[in-house]
Length: 385
Ligand SMILES: *Cc1c(COP(=O)(O)O)cnc(C)c1O
Image (cartoon, rainbow, N blue to C red):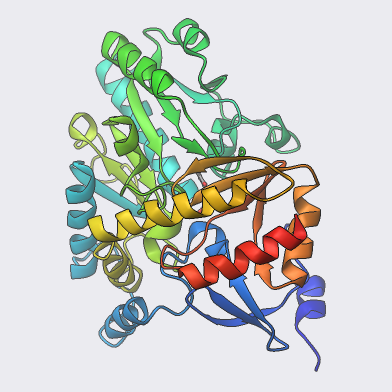
């Protein structure tokens, strides 16, 4: 059989180091390649397929909306968009939502909001935004500029001004960096691409105290950590943090592109008509699917996520060659003695799709992965690691 791999190599821009597999279909945490070989999916498309592949409820919600109308424009009202915004506000305690189509766009909205809020309250002056070393906030020029990793700060200059970086969990460095010119501090509660490292509670408390003193906004980038991934709806809940802005994306749409920028009390009226927009943002079919995802992330599911995470962690730590396990909930980093990339390739050959983050293996399984699938995947990881 002639696969589509060669065609992809010839015609698709060369921006990804793809694994050597052609995926064609799936069901929950089980995926199948072009040769009919089965895989257990520990990545869910980088924390996107919240309830796995081809989830019935999500699919039906999207199809139902497609049978009505697939897109209008943001010049008109549509029900799924309003419903999703209400749900997200209720889950988070935030006041309003702006919808875009990706994590980077959600963060663009957060950056624009923070800049405008600062300017509105400082006679039109410009503020700076502080982000963390090893953060990841996206691939657009502004979100790349906000990303605190040197590897991303080459080739594409000039970058956007107004970002400064401090090391994660370094309260002293943050204290030295913030002042009356600080518009916002932007954080991931668990740095995902940076190596699956959760922030320390003391550092989050430090941010809160400095924010109370200087008045800057706190932006939580929950693009990856949101929507039940860590065992809470949003990871801020683990830390008792009530940020001014929460951004989320990845798992929200259950597999279709969406990004959301949630605005709290202080900034709910900052963006006005004409200040920001997106052609596809809030698309009714995507939002209808997202509603079916968000409605199912209840206390029962979150408890299951926490229990599965504890089970996986406990069993990973028993494996020879596993040095440490990091992360929160079903966002799991595994430090091993061998090269993570090589291990991921070996796991693939044996039927497990697993990701990497920096030097670690990384698991972001669908939240509804079964214990049977977890056991089967752990057995393969044992052989490989
Ligand atoms: C993936 C990710 C982004 C970027 O999201 P895209 O949808 O790829 O634009 C931003 N922030 C965090 C924390 C992410 O994990």
